[in-house]
Image 1 (cartoon, rainbow, N blue to C red):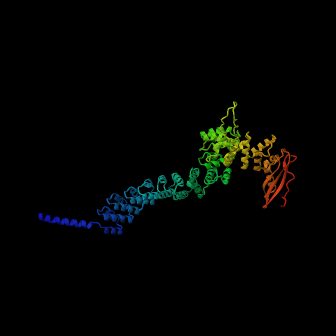
Image 2 (cartoon, rainbow, N blue to C red):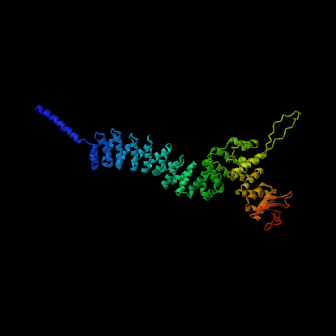
Image 3 (cartoon, rainbow, N blue to C red):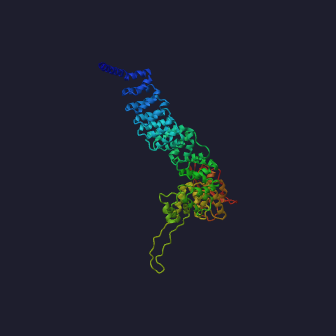
Length: 604
């Protein structure tokens, strides 16, 4: 009995070993099952102890796109072999149905960077909205390729939830990743995305800026309100990009406050030192409805915005004055308000022109009145001279009233001290300052002329100042600038002087009024005994197309009622000629040529 048992045991062992050997899987089996589509056998083979079998089964299931194997393939993430884990990620990616979204999301956390990249790519291809949060986190992955894949996939998913993370990467990411993030923002959109794209218009790298342009255009009408708001952005490069994008989207505003901001932004990027006449015309055409927006623009930190707004506002005194004064109370800083409070002492005050000009100037958020500069200018004489001749000094608005005051500087050298005092003792003389106010008057005229429209309104007010030096010099500046707004004040001043019996032939008010060449001033000009400039003007009107080149008179008569004769030199068709013109007061007191000028110039 015992022997049979012993003999039977080896037999059983042999049979058992034979059975095990017969059930062992091989790579060849996997290939056969793959060809036969034996999914269940392949799934079971995933737990085979042999590495090569598990690997072959994993790859086969991927090639067969066996969706039923998703859970089993996902379980291989815990396999001891890295190659198996990688193969499972690849196979799940190849299956490529929504069923793999969860395992692909988990793949973003695996140790292998290539596995994380495949996970990110697949989630993008599947437009897996549920994976947006995890992909957003992957933008900070330690591997650059994973970051890139995550950025691309967020764009493919087109969900606004990815915009915030994409925008955040624009601050620190390498240029290649910034480009991809910007491109994806053109698909994820949303307010955060659009604002990020607008800021990307200022990126230091051209490819990023170009991508931002394209992405904004891709978003189309949705981004237009944001673009309109960005017209006020302090960065010029952003304003440039916004304008370009609005133009490409055919979304340039044509009315309302948006039109004003667009035109201001357009004027701020043209790299011109002077104001653009076309923009001025458009802003003027906007009418009274634009006043509130322009007053707001006058508070902008953007210099060009303020200059355009100020120019338009100052040309609409009646519609603007009250609102400008209210705005200055609301928006002006303490230094500006303190400066503005002094306007009652400025030349020509009180004046509505001064009130308007000061109120608008005070809206400047960067208003600065340097006490040292102002104090020196107020002292006039040499202290003011030293300020004006400094290369860094500019006739900015805070100093314009003081420069106008300098138009009346009458400083003269002090009298020379005697050699001996009353007791006959020799006097130790101090050095005399030989400075004369004329130098300041000339320099102030130059600075005010250079200031252009910035100084116009206070100069117009100064025309009617009691100080005739200030008033006359102000008139001369405005006449040289052909400033039409000075016409009525000049007419008023000249009329008063004529009524007072003043001789105006050499007056700067008369000269300025002539230069404005306004028909409404002609009746007044006829009542003044002509000077050489007047003779040339009369000649030009009589002979249009003939250019006068000189006007001389030998008149030395002190009698303002006597006729006066001028020798006019001119060029007609390339030939130089002369004509004598005599002016005489007629029965109405008008100074006209007598004899009258011939209809045609004499032949030469």
